[in-house]
Image (cartoon, rainbow over all chains, first blue to last red; front, side, top):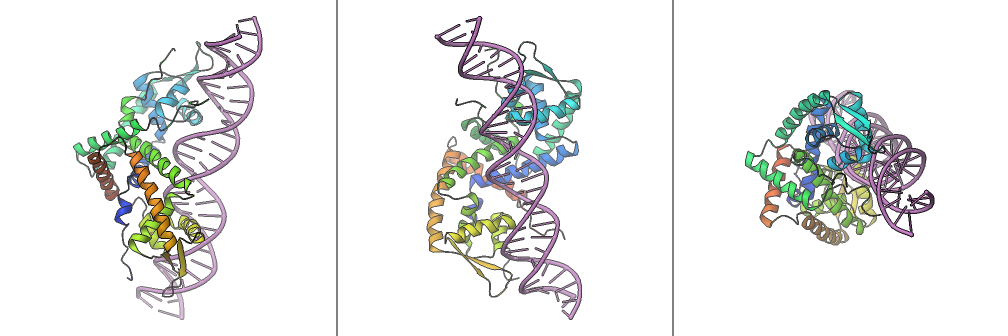
Length: 158
Length: 158
DNA sequence: CCACAAACGTTTGCGTCGCCAACGATTCAC
DNA sequence: GTGAATCGTTGGCGACGCAAACGTTTGTGG
């Protein structure tokens, strides 16, 4: 027996940055597992939801709205386009851009992924009351707001 | 102008797992930058604090208490030992183990890193009132508690 | 009108992070 | 005493977020 597996020191367990990292890890796991069961990914959901809520957009716009990096967006859209969830047409008004449009298939897929995401959030927040869940969301949103988009624009300082 | 850079959709910004991921990223950045200025690392601080609070321990014990993986702990202790922050002696009572002990140098280093960590938490939580900070910490701790150690033991299911 | 700067999509590659698998050495349990 | 388990260590993997660069296309100032 020698030493009963002492838990982590109290100080360490009260450090917000550490709590955030740990919780984020758990959260991403819960979300990841569920979406993986549908062959999907965090990013797919974010893109689909953004398209559904804010309408068609260029890849760069999607990148800014979702916080997904330009270079990662390519693969995400490839997969979404390959499964007919999304159409990617050259923008006639600006031939640098692609206009990404949500399809009917994509809308159905979004519905399914949305259900999974809600499940995951529910399991994540299981130990909290509804009020506490709202409060946590509010506080986290305040942090995210204050510290600007975690993902600064691609060209913010020329 | 065409399109004023529309922000992220509301739904997306209200998803806890996403908020957690974003905040954790910001938090780790704030901590990382400060500690890097001292040539230190997240993990160094966690180990030093754990040693200071719970006394000498084997590497495996430190691993469990800090949540740092066994295999990563090696490098951390190498660096802490190379800078005389820590002594690593073979345990005479169990020659598999190393007994890791905090030195006076280590205690001084911990004091410095601790100050930096507090600064980082302060900047992270800047937009929150003291009460809100406590509440956030409490809620996150509840999550971390409920979902067990984010890092299950090395041999939990033989 | 024309050079020059900027934005776009894409590819390639990097650094960090958490983790697993395996190994030799040692200890524990039956 | 034999087999299981633990320890420290090495090497490597996959996910994530990001930077750099390139060719293409658009805009902007002289």
